[in-house]
Amino acid sequence: MAYATARHILVNSEEECNTLKTEIENGASFESVAKGNSKCPSGSKGGDLGKFGPGQMVPEFDKAVFGGDVGVLYGPIKTQFGYHLLEVTSRG
Image (cartoon, rainbow, N blue to C red; front, side, top):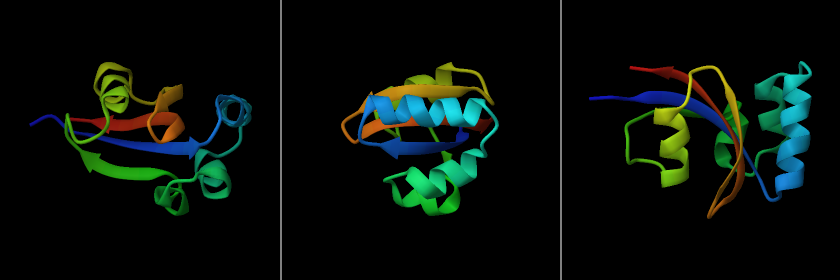
């Protein structure tokens, strides 16, 4: 079965998401940005979502996780929960 591991940062606004994306692209650590800003409980673990398969996350996530490239920072991705920055860390 296909699986992926990923990490994300969840915030309330697209503007905040873009600001944090710029910080990471300019060298800030994904983990520290997640710990300081993410509204998801995974923020305390640097945004780590662990290992999951297709269909276990919301459709917007699935599309990015299983259709995008590993190691690329995606976002803002809007879901029912808010706006996410997402990075696929592995796929198998």
